[in-house]
Length: 131
Image 1 (tube, one colour):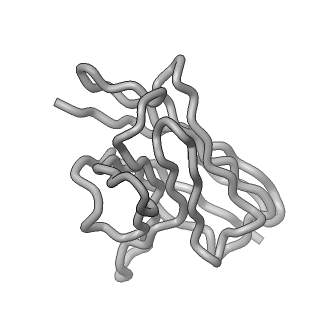
Image 2 (spheres, helix red, strand yellow):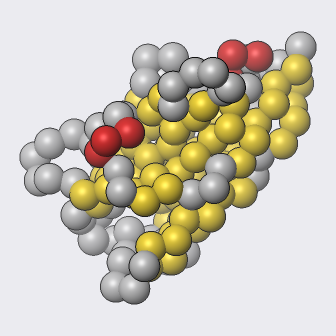
């Protein structure tokens, strides 16, 4: 059984920063070893869930949506089996519920920023950016 727990959401002014965390609980799983993609998605009411950033366990290769490149940084801590999303220069368009997800990673391929690439999801953490 895989459990993902997000934390770190909140309210921030435009231009501010937040760091989200996603703790992974799964028997035999370690971020030190390859084989998985970990990702962050976000969703606002009435819109589809969109991929924001992803990271491959083990090697730590990262992938970003164009909308967040240069502002968001995804990382992982193998000691804690926790993934992070450091968000800077936030604006109102970043307001959303943020979800972390885990899926398989095929060697040599990128980690997708599409929902169908992921099997397990957290409950989400709300980020609200005000002007």
